Structures are given as structure tokens and as C-alpha cells.
Image (cartoon, rainbow, N blue to C red; front, side, top):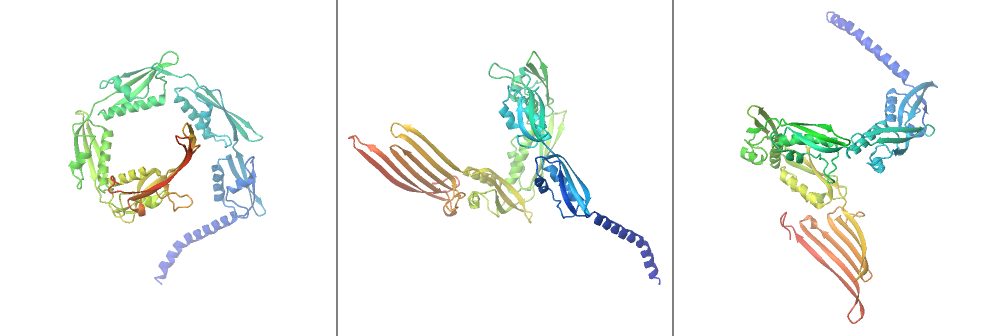
Length: 543
């Protein structure tokens, strides 16, 4: 009895919550079941050029399936994302115990024509080529805004910074097509008469002129047009120049002084600040590589020398490369600086976390849609199981680039289940390796002559029907004329049986009509060939 009473109390406490939960579940199920009606029909309203079939193909709501609000919401997004419509909304009506779904759309007009007002400095053909809006596409307001900005940028590059661009729209409501007319007021080109520099006590004007790209008008050699985007970049160039020479607080700004019509002066104000030098360099955390070795690769900054953050960044990169070349790809190298404005000294601290050695687990090759894996692998200076070596990695990249088979060559590192073992991923982008050329001419000896040549630098006679990807070289050339014909076939295999031994052959045939000194005519025909072999003794020596 004593055990029953506590259980009864617990039951009385929990019963209301259980009842409420169960009741809520029942109510929820009823609400779901009341909304879960079948879609009886789908109607599209407002479409003019986009067919109903196209619109229905973009949504997932189907006749005969349950009406689900989340699917309807997603359908709205899908229709918006097509770029066809400026407005989309969905309604529903009761029909035969289910719902009739009504989709209201407002189509964007289709661009029928793009025209420009008369322009002087930029050709209409150039303007059309740069626009996002194109004839036959739906009008997009964002693209139009970008187009106006693009036009202004084109004119700014030509020294016309005050160009005005307006867009006129002409819509045919019947066909839902629109014509766009850009009205461009080009304005006047502004020329720079003089560039005046103030505040540069450490460097002469001549030195600053070499740093900036803005130029004043100088006879017919330089038109001296004002280009404000370049002028803004010039301020960054001046600051970078001073920073590289120890003036890490340097600032530069400019103002424009209007003169007579079409001419201005540019006034550049420089605040040089104090020049800083390196007070001390403290290196910590390095155990594998000594300070002496690290100092050897720090070629940009030294104690007592000029301090520059850009130069320090280069040296930090050199230290990371030093560790990477030794196989410590996990090494972290961080720098911190402490400035003393009174003495003009900068204390540099370099903290190194060397990590551990890393080894190659697998070598994966990606992007070689034509070239065989073996052609790439034989150019690599590392194998699975080797420790990572940055120098060998760079040499491998050079060897792959020297093949001429790829537009791009890159490397990536992928994690594996083992911390100190990583997969090396070789990423390539195939280039065009085949050429087809022909030509012709006339000479007094051979009269009319012509030639045709086919060359494939990445040939593979076993890969039918493309015959590419094996790293072989093939050349076929035919020369024909009124008095002679030459034919040549040349083939080279740089790696026979995947060994650094090359071999190849040349076959030729020559036909010529000749006249000797006695006036007799005769035909000359020669056929021949040759075989070539070579061996690569070292990476740089072959014979």
C-alpha cells in the first residue's frame, strides 16, 4: 500500500501533461488531415510569351497529388529564379473536394532592340559587347543598372569622368517586347596641365612621378587625360613606396584645381611621417632549423636596416618555404612587431611552430581529360611514401609546364586518416596540342608551291579515334608544286616502355622534274628515312 501511494501521486502529476500532449497531437493530426487535400487543377494566368507547359515544368506541384504549402512556397521561388517574371503569386480555390491552384505571373518584357545616342569617344559596337543586357533576353533591372555603370567606367578609362547616362524604355504591350535606348552625354575630356607634389621632403618630385601612373599633358606624346580611378590608385602607390622605404605611417591624398576650360591641376599632398628601422629580430620555437639557416633566407630585412611590412611578409614567406622544402608542411610561422615612435625602431618577433614531417600517401591526378596518367606521373620528382619536398614540387610543376600539354598546372594537399600522411593532388587543365597549317606561294624555280602540315605534340597511336594523350610527337607534312613534291612523316616516342629512352623515325619522299644542261628533261625521285634513339642520363643531360 505504501508503494502504491507514491506511484499514484506521480501518475496524478503526469496525467495532465500526457493528456494535453495527446490532445495537441490529435488536434495537429486533424489540422494536417484537413489541409491535405488533393490538387484537382492548375491554372496559369498572365503569361504572354512563356508557354503553360514551360511554367508547369518548373514547379513540383502536380494534379492528383496532395496540396502542400511548403511545396507551393518552393514553387514560387523556382519560378522567380527562372528570370522570366517580375511578379509571381499563387492562390487556391475549393474544387470537387480538393484545391484548384491558380498561378498568377507577370512576365518581364523581352529585349527586342538596344540603341545608343550618337557617341564620339566610344564605338557603339564596343558598348554593345560590354553590356549584360542582350537582344532576345528578358529585361533585368539589375543588369540594366550594371550596364549604366559599365558605360560610365568605359568613358572614365578614356578620361571622361562626367559622362551622364540615361535609359529610355519603349514597351510594346501587345508583344511584351521592349526597346532600350541609352542616351549618353559624353561631356568634355579633362586634361591635366600640371601635377604638383607637396610634403615630399625625403624624395624629389622626379622620384614620385616615376611611382604614379597619372601623367600631365606633354605635347603629342601624352594626352594627359584625367582618370580618377588611376589617380586614386596612385595614392596607394605612393603610400606603398614610402612604406617599403621605412615610412610606415606615410599618407597621401590629392585635390583637383580647376583651370580654364578642359584643364586642371592635380595637387598631391604627402605626409611622410617618421622613418623606421629594424631594432631587433627575435626568433623562437625553431629546433629543427637553426637561426643561421633562417637568417640566410631572410633577404629583405635585417637588424639596423629599413623596416617594411611588405618586406617582412616576403621574409616570412621565405621561412615557410624553407620548412616546406624540408617536409614540414604543418609549420606555422607568425610575426609580430613592436614600434617605438621615439627611437624610430621596430622590434620584430618571429614565432615558429615547426610541427612534424609529412609524407605522401597517394598521388592523385585530376583534370587530364586527354593525357594519360603515366605521362604526368613520369614528370613528377616525388613518389608515394616520399616526404614532401617543396623544391621537388616546384621542379615537378616546371617539368609539366615544359611539356606544353597544359594551360594550367597546380598542386593541392588532401587529408587522409593518418595525420602525417597526405595525398598529393595534381590538377591540370588540358591545352590544345594539335596544329593544322597550310600555305602557298610562287618562286621562279618551283613556280606555284603549296604546303599542308598536321602536327600533334601529345600523340597516342593506341588511342583510337582521338589519337591523343600518350605524350608522343607526330608530324605529317606535304609540299606540292608545279615542279616538285615533298612528303615527310616524323614520329617520336620520348619514353620507350616508360623508361627515359627516346626513339623515333623519319620517312620522306621527294619528287622533282629537272632539266639538265643539255636540254634533256628527267624526273628525280628520292625515298628515305632514318631512326633516332636517345637517353636521358640525368635530369639536365641527355644524348
